[in-house]
Picture 1 (tube, rainbow, N blue to C red):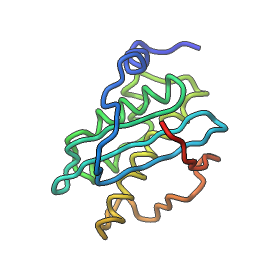
Picture 2 (picture 1 turned 30 degrees about the horizontal axis):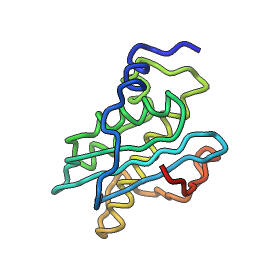
Picture 3 (picture 1 turned 180 degrees about the vertical axis):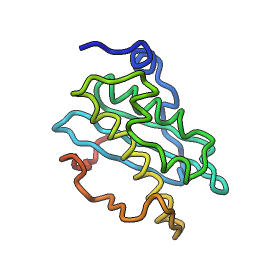
Length: 148
C-alpha cells in the first residue's frame, strides 16, 4: 500500500493532537471492529472555531485524516466547517488508498458530531446539520466508549 508524502507527514507529525478541556463540542465516531475510533473537540467563539483537537485510535490513514481535517477547519465558521467533505480531506492528503477512504469519512463524521454536540448544548440550528442523526449507522460504525 502506497501512501503520499503528505499522509506520512500527518501520520508521523500529527497536528492538533489532544483534548480541549471544557470543549464546546465533542464528537466521537468509529468502532473497535474496524479498528478506528476518532474523537474531535471544538472550541467556538461567536460562530468561529477557535480551537480544534483530536484523539484517534487507529491506523496511519485515520490519524492523518484527523490531523488534516482539524487543520482545514481551524479558524473557520461553523457553516464553513460543516461544508467540509471527506473528498476535501482526501484531496488535501494527496489521495488515500481505496481501502482507507473510510478514514476520511470518519474525519468528516467526527467533525459533524462535534458540531452537532455544540449545537445541541446551545439550542442552535445549522443548515449543514439538517437531517443529521448522530446515531445513524453511516458505514457500520458503532460509537463505542474507549479510553484514550
